[in-house]
Length: 127
Image (cartoon, rainbow, N blue to C red; front, top):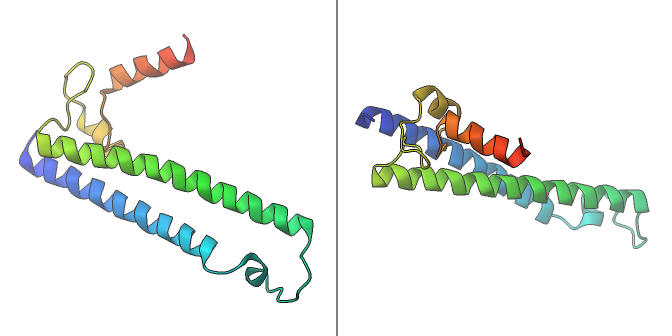
């Protein structure tokens, strides 16, 4: 792969990583900035409705799931950046063939060519 292409993909990966880290920071700030009662505008000493508690719990769980998925994606981005440093970026980790530019444009952290990834998905699906 050409150096100019590597620089382009490296910039793309770094941009996506920065976006994910920013989003994760926003989620963390939103969940930890205010006590639950204060966030609802209820400053009384009485507990608030169970439905509100359920909604808050669901929102926390969704934020955790999103942060977890984002964390996994950041890991894959970091691995792709390491492959750039090692000079193995753009090569399938299974068969060693070049990963198409179109695939890398769509999934810049891809570690497998489309054929090997499809075979992996089929195997997971039990086909």
